[in-house]
Length: 208
Image 1: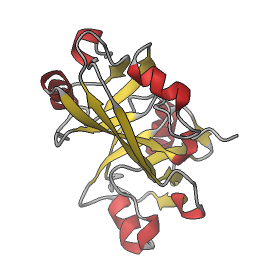
Image 2: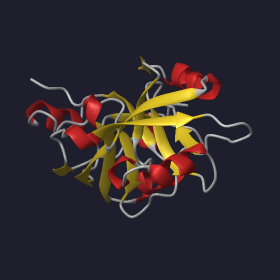
Image 3: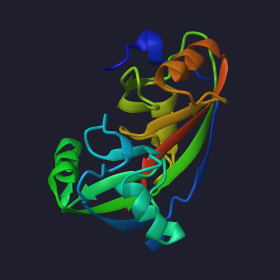
Image 4: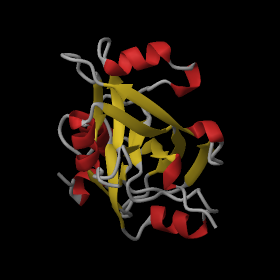
């Protein structure tokens, strides 16, 4: 579902952003190859609400993903917060990617580590943030689905490449709250000053 303005918009006075890892390096996107075994589940919980990727929420203690991690190099292990951006050559369609994961005997995934950044937001009466989110009640994050006029749009007009808030960015945390989409929305509505923690895959960065 998409949250309405009353639920999701937060007026701001000032913006500050601190980005981590905005320059892609060879280790930022890696390939994970998993081989199906009878009666063994994949063992991943993912969020596909953006329709384009599978955002890893949790790696279960048992399953193919855990077995892969046990044998993989540390910097190529599947971890919460990463993005599956391609499965067996399929990208940009999370439903088709999930189908490939479920039906293929060999699952080859391109996995992007996350860019995370923080945006400091202080309320100004009468001004809305201009962000609209998509989420489900059990989601762990809020997905930016629309950016309208407001402080975020103004920030984007002057932000250097890679520093703007983008459609499909995820809000993972509001202040110290990171316990799911509904709690994030509640904190946005209750706090006059908030720090938003955003996430996106490296593949999402536009380059000149």
